[in-house]
Length: 201
Image (tube, rainbow, N blue to C red; front, side, top):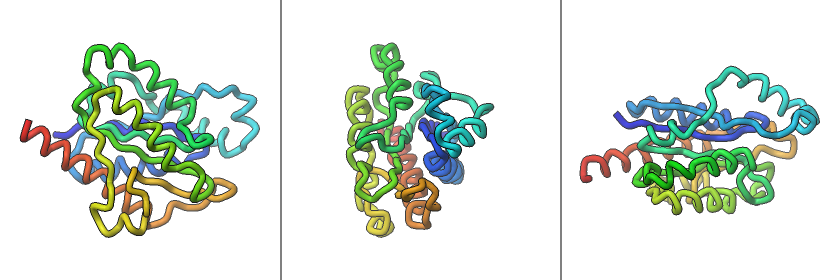
């Protein structure tokens, strides 16, 4: 059994929808999956300024939050964050910043990692966000498994660094088939590589 942790932050729900698709895809590959939203740290005044943000915060209020145990348990970690000025959100970064003790013990090393993101526009910092996310993976000693162009569907999705969605000016454009297929491929590829490493290691 391969353990897959989907660790992500979503403000208005797009990353949440992507995480749900990854959860389904990983489950269909026979993996044991933990989907975990990181804790919200934004003040209520900021959240309430966007009705979709407040709606999402309320909708996931009872869901379990990501912990270091989820990272330690996982064989595959799929990290997700919307773009914030070409970088990861403070919410996801705050969670990663708490992992120092696990890093010091070496328990974050030798796992397979990959990422997913979303922005309002096609050139809104998606690739730089994924690359910023992967800085931590390098420090963990993780094994970065990007999708590259390992399947023809990636020429539709167009992002070799991970999977990305363009949400539109109002953050409400639906996730298209090309992105859904790319999410399925990402889950399957990372699980396959993890299993190969386990067998060969």
